[in-house]
Each structure stands twice: as structure tokens, then as C-alpha cells.
Length: 112
Image (cartoon, rainbow, N blue to C red):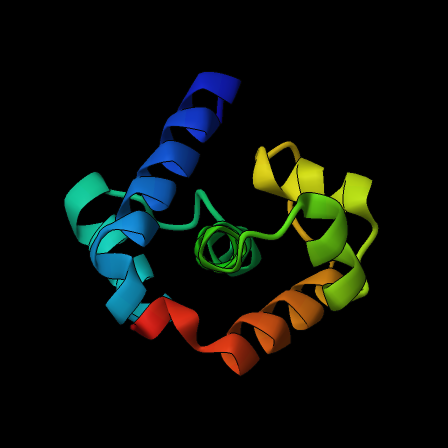
């Protein structure tokens, strides 16, 4: 898959996560992407989860008025790493994704 295609898919996931994705689980989001955009195995679950949870994390950061540095300290993730994840420069490692999911689910702000 070309870089342009990958970028397009990432943007679609991000838009979906910012919209109705707030109320859906990862499986539902992937089903929508497959049916509406023909995305089958072009994007890994970890990539989708990273984008969705980073979108939810961004909402938490905004609602709590936290800097990236403050957020990284609370999560136990390096601030440079966090900045890269926010800008979709890379996908979270398994360990980073676990911290991200745990933090977002503990905050539960994305639901309200």
C-alpha cells in the first residue's frame, strides 16, 4: 500500500473516531471501515486502536487542560513518544497501547 493510501486510511479512522467512534468499540469501527471504505487487512487492529485511543486521549487532555508533558507523566509514557503518537507518526507498541487504553478507560471522560 502506498504512503498516500495509508495516510488516507489513517485520516478516515481519525475522523470516524472523532465522530461516532466515541460510542463504538474497536470491532465496530473496523466493521464500518471495511464496509464503507473497503479496508480489509490494509490496517492492523493495533493501528486502529492507536488512532482511536489517541483521539480519546486528546479529548481528555483538552477537557482537563493538560500539557503533553503533564499527560505523559500521568500516563508513564515519554512525552516525545506521546507527541509522535498524537501526530500519527507511528503506531503505539503493545506496552504503550496497554498504558493508553488503561488511562483512557480509567478516565472515562470520552463517554460524557
